[in-house]
Amino acid sequence: MAQLLRNEVPEKLTWDLSTIFASDEQWETAFSEIQQDLKGLKQFEGHVGDSATTLQNALEADLKLERQLEKVYVYAHQIYDQDTTNQTYAAFNTRVQGLWAEVSEATAYFQPEVLNIPDDSLTRFLKTPELQPYTHLFETLQAQKPHTLPADQEGLLAGVSDILGASENTFGVLDNSDITFADVHTEDGEIVPLTNGLYSLLLESQSRDLRREAFETLYDSYIRLQNTFASTLSSHVKGHNFLAKVRHYDSAREAAILPHSLPTSVFDTLRQTVDENLPLLHRFVALRRKVLGVEDVHSYDLYVPLVDEVEFDVTYDRAQEIVLAALAPLGQDYLEIVQKAFDERWIDVVENKGKRSGAYSSGTYDTNPFILLNWQNNLNNVYTLAHEMGHSVHSYMTRHQQPYHYGDYPIFLAEIASTTNESLLTDYLLKTNDDSKFQAYVLNQYLDGFKGTVFRQTQFAEFEDWIHEQSAAGEALTADKMSAYYAALNQRYYGPDLFPDEEIAYEWTRIPHFYYNYYVYQYATGEAAATTLAERIINHDGAEAYKTYLKAGSSDYPLNVISRAGVDMNQAGYLKQAFSVFESRLDQLENLLIK
Image 1 (cartoon, helix red, strand yellow):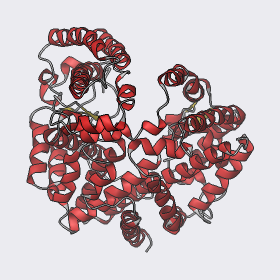
Image 2 (cartoon, rainbow, N blue to C red):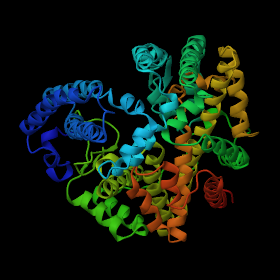
Image 3 (tube, one colour):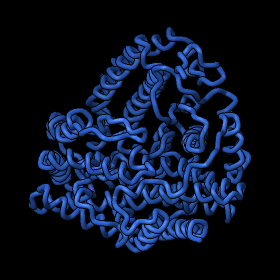
Image 4 (cartoon, helix red, strand yellow):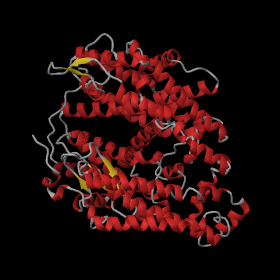
């Protein structure tokens, strides 16, 4: 079936970008105004700390410019994403990227100058009525003071940022462009070159021979380049440790976590609690062995579904009804926002030629949220709709409750809202469909998702922490050393029913997340918090407390925000509750599949 051209998509299935700018000409005018306003910032450079009035004026000029820029940026990137073959909008997107760089450069003086204000002077300034609304903003800036260097040294670090990022860029070129794989067979028996995308599909094949062939073929290429990948990863880790040292942090982990107003104990609690619950993952692998009827589970057996995909041909209109019903425990005020998204064309629904693939939620403070989809009539797309709606309602509630300077939320909290919606959808589907095959399919999807997000991402985080510690201690991160550690770590996570394939020891060579600087643990904490919150919403009337988190934005520290929703992420309780849900659903799947 031929793809629709953009102008062939029914209007009701497209997002309404005219609510941002009524025309391209209005966008051009706003773009030009930002370029003019940039010049006005020069008057504050070197004078931010002169007085409370000057500090206020400089801050508000900075925020005004950022706010204008975000609106111009969102229009450009979304109108480009809806049809990347449109050269006019490709140019819009390129131009706004350049403007973003100009604004970043023009406002770079502000934070260092704030940090140079003597503490007693800043305390006095913040007592003025005009600056009191910004108190938490300045608190978060001040927290970076012990780790901010003199201006000339900050300039040097900024100048070498490209050099410090070179290893990550080299990995990206190797992994996305230069590495090649031998040919493999597809499900249809066709012989084709293996790609990373095809690899993922083949690992879900019911043919074990195809899975094994794909696995061995892929890793043959990575193993041949193991020393090159060890060099890129080792160099990148050294860069993290170097920056941590010069910024006076105790470790790279601390340097990555503390700037987000989080304690490192969140990371430690995650690792410890996941370790205590590894027997649940071992049980899930053992169930896989029984259902597949194999003597040992190999690494290439971990992704094949235990339940055949069920027939669930669901139209977009029907999906809207399902999502509204599933999210009903969140209350009428939440559902009214979801309905607005459906009625007021916040969503770009169907695939068309040139449209960006995947899905996301976007928007800015002065727009409604927007959702990009590439709709297919299946259950996975219902989950995608619920997930992205979680982000969008979070953004909507935050922006309607907070001033602009607190109108966003940290990444640590972002995925909780979307994943909570997925958990509510899972609960709804299990309660409203008593077909055993359908229930088994939904349970399998849930357990595989939890395995991949909580267990697997924590495994990655543990490896990431180990390589940083080893490098900081002066140990060489050779391919042999990293592979030996990774093999043992992988075996500890998946347990005695997993066969120790030699190839899996080299999985670290192909994981881009190891270049993200302590990012992956947040996937695991977010999934666990969402599982716990969904349980509270369904069983303990926790919706109103949950919505305090959705409305808080960045007006308080992340752990304070989520604690008001009912989750103390300093303690292990939320993780234990999430594992309790996992265990309960594992019990259910075992009962359905093992007769």
